[in-house]
Image (cartoon, rainbow, N blue to C red; front, side, top):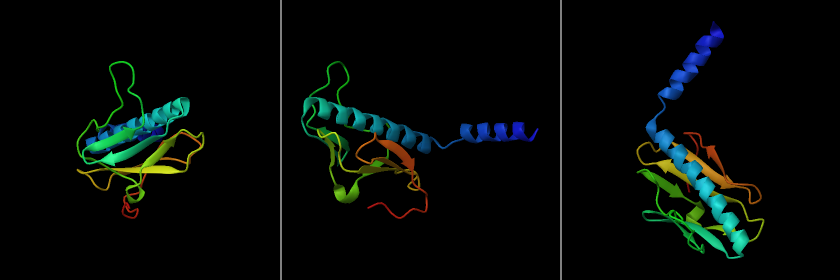
Amino acid sequence: MLAITAVVTAGVSLAFRDSSQQQLEHEASRLAAWLDAARASSRASGVPVRWRVTGDGFAFEGLAPKPGPQDWPSRWLGTGIVAQTVAGQVLLLGPEPVIGPQRVWLSSAQAPTLRLSVRTDGVGPFVVEPLAPDAPALP
């Protein structure tokens, strides 16, 4: 009986998750996938690729246009997403097989305590990690 109660409670709590949190998690997963794709494209082409935050989104620099209907993105799908890097740093995604550690912090303008990190150690793929609400302010 206790196990059933635990499962039901977990299901209910997931059903009532904040839409700001879901949106932020979706944007972070999307960004991690695009950063990995850009890194792979940079390695394949031998051309340096950079990613940077812009006033209304972000930009991939050094990538050739993608064939087909979908080009490299430059905007968030949702509203109120805030991205930051260390001291406004531009992420270098290649073409070397090993890049330095890279990190982007994402937060929600609607719920500033919701923060995620999209990072790589420079060898593995980009991963999404939560930041505790009481973590120090972003740089």
